[in-house]
Length: 257
Image 1 (cartoon, one colour):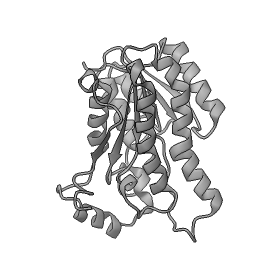
Image 2 (cartoon, helix red, strand yellow):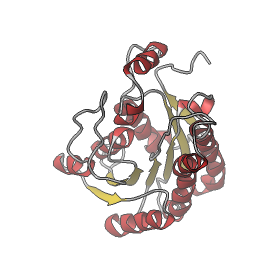
Image 3 (tube, one colour):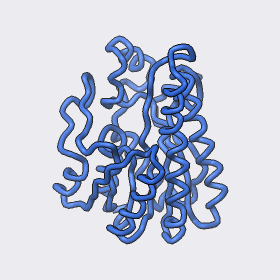
């Protein structure tokens, strides 16, 4: 198993992409901390309509080790407590996956300033705070890894004036932090998912979902397992000489851009 014995935190781990990463890490032998606002998986209208049981319970039911920690990633004290609980429970930290994120539809005239702040705080500021808190622990690990879940929208507009700029900043945050901690043997990378069939896509209507499918060269929408496979690779020893990179997992969605 590629992650045997390693301790991983995955924010937003109860549902969607985060849940997929947690389950994949556990299958590879990692001990997983599922950090999220709620323990129950989200259920969508079109995708993940019957997701169950909770992620940590699913891991335990398969013989793995997992801990659920309720966390609002926009609260600095909650993130500090998350790191403390992880180290107290599992004895250290090897992998941080900054996956938690939100999207609020709207253009520059529709989105309120408070909503803009909320998206940027969740999708960018929280990643920096979690990374800052994790680095001292990762420096004590021989396998330190930081993964940021960005988006194909990091490479273009179309997702609103908060989401796309925040995700673009996430890609550059990975590069900057990679330069900072490279000498410590810690790698820092980003993953840019395309359309992934999760409950978080509920703001879209069927016609919009079909348009995304039609635009994707490979003949299906993405699945959480597709992103999870990339996360496992980047967290493993196979990727020990890859840092400051962004791996797009999008079925070819942005190939024509």
